[in-house]
Image 1 (cartoon, rainbow, N blue to C red):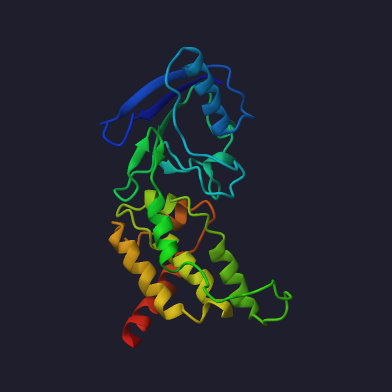
Image 2: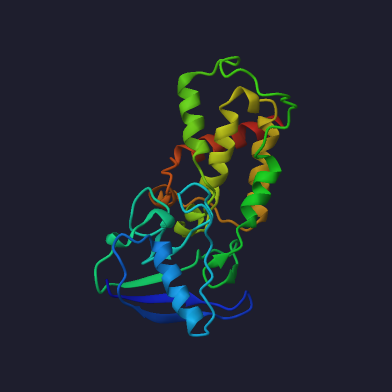
Amino acid sequence: MKLKLKIWRQKNAQDKGAFKEYEMEGISKDMSFLEMLDVLNESLIKKGEDPIAFAHDCREGICGSCGLHVNGRAHGPVKGATICQVHMRSFEDGQTIVIEPWRAAAFPIIKDLVVDRTGFDRILQAGGYISVNTGSAPEANLIPINKDDANEAFDAAACIGCGACVAACKNASAMLFTAAKVSHLSLLPQGGTESTERVIRMVEVMDNEGFGNCTNTGACEAECPKEISISHIARMNREFLSSSARK
């Protein structure tokens, strides 16, 4: 395949940044998108140029490290997949591909395509855990859990915290991420003990980090690589109002 890439280059957080164009030839359709960037970086290094910085780790759609805007879509053109799972056969020979970092004030750019997503970590630190002393692992069937609740908790737990929901939202809202974490724990009996404090603390930190409000457009759900439902946002809102009234 022959491609033209327009990639956002930015030396550091203070740099203004700009798009730079690269021509590539001989790219296999079976190559992953990140492998294509690896090939580009190898050529840049051989020419003595600075390679393009981009976040990645497992490359199996599990860790949530990768995240790029590709032709205006979070994680590129394949629905329900992270950019590390996208292969070059999803693009046309001769196509121009525009690659940008997540755009959100709460996700400041560190370098090139890498953004600072530690705002998510601080939301989790505010309440995304169960603080009871669990001791050794209990037998799996010791605590009965309603099947519907277990299914919903499992779906919410599928959130990998990649930030695509923030990047897709015109308000850069983190409500889908926060709601998934709240929902996951509040649906399980182990997480019920501190459910009142959890939702209030996590929403407070989410707001303090500079994430915007929900737009009700559903863009977060549409672009989420794990297809997390916005119904979790409704549950989080109900829990927040209920907890605020009891506080």
